[in-house]
Image (cartoon, rainbow, N blue to C red; front, top):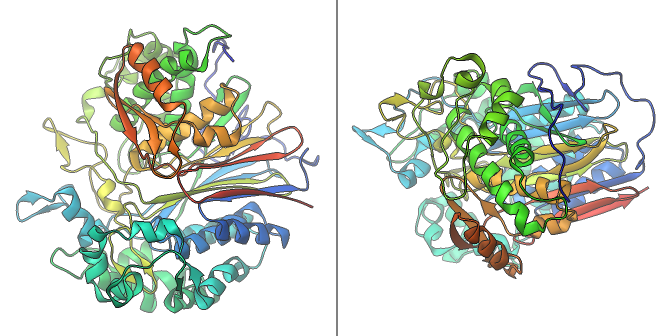
Length: 589
């Protein structure tokens, strides 16, 4: 199980162009040989109907990107509490032919009129609930533009074909799942979701919440997708749909600033993945404003460097090292990661081997309160830690993750969101609008200093979303992983990396293992959840970490939704989080 030191570790972080896999140079030769698992494909997502749509797309000759668009369009219909057309996300795409890994940043953006005190109303900073439900919470949705950008570069099916499954379900009606039904709690019925006429009629027909087994049509959603099929993103970001979005944002007591100009000006950012080595593997994830590229590589590198366990140590013995690495990674992520177009994010320095070694050998031990490090002081003798105020902004989860590998060995890791459950609870044209701007830090200053993640004009809020693809030593796809879960996503996804790459777990075991979230001095350890029941490892892990000296908290019902794929020697192995309704299905030509 353990242990390979990072001797000879070199800085293999790329910040421009598409990141190659493995990233030995900024560009490698295209691949010509067939993938060893050619003819095998897999999709895993939070609902079987989305997986079926993805598999149908790939069986029809579509790519992993076609599968991802088809799956997410369905999820926006059947799982509206988590993601949809009114939100955004990050899509990490590996194209085997060109041997490149590209990130499509579809994060929502603040209005151009937004200022650092955007959430200050009548002299007071809005509390979290008030901010969520206000029009100020809604950023320009990125999902539709993301679909188009990814499809233009890597799609194989006709554009409209990717929406056929979702349109049919919306027209014919989909069966309400237990998870959607259970999400429609009394607190939502007594809030805007149950009071606004359109959402009340959709989610609470005749005053009663949709129940599992009900059939629900959504002709507005179908019409929206048909318009997008015909006219592309222009149908969404201008014209009647755009005007309806603006009207919804400007409704209510606390209105937002989003305008038609903001919608028309929205652009997808195509970025390189941030890639780095972990033993014989190469981990690639999304760059800022996503946390994935920095956090996943920091945590896994620190995990190796911190290690005190022997090669034959038990899994419980390795948890100590993993939790220490997670605490240090979270502390740096919280402090430094934000929109790189608005502030300086020292990505290369945060992943520099000399800085990581200094973090690993700093004397940080179980029970200590983690603080951000200072790569400027370590590497350049120029401290930078105090350029920002400390930031531990909270976030609630309303997100979904999907993983795909197609018949040719291309892969997609796609995390999409509307932020909180049911987003801002504002509705138009058959979909809910996000409350993504509450991912900005409120208030915008802490300790008298501005925080990196403060609101700003056109700015993208920091995201915890960490869609990740892992490559083997031959440079082929080995693992595709990611999760919903708000700020806890970092811990959830890192757990799957450690579980598969070091602890010898299967994909399904990795998704089902207890979640450990070590953000700050208190380490949350999941011992049970409402869906899967008591986790047999949870109590054991809690005892091991408490005994190691950590300040622990026993929790139930973590909201992960891990969906991962591992490419074994002769098959694709899937893992779908038992805490949700997801499935992983392989198809073979």
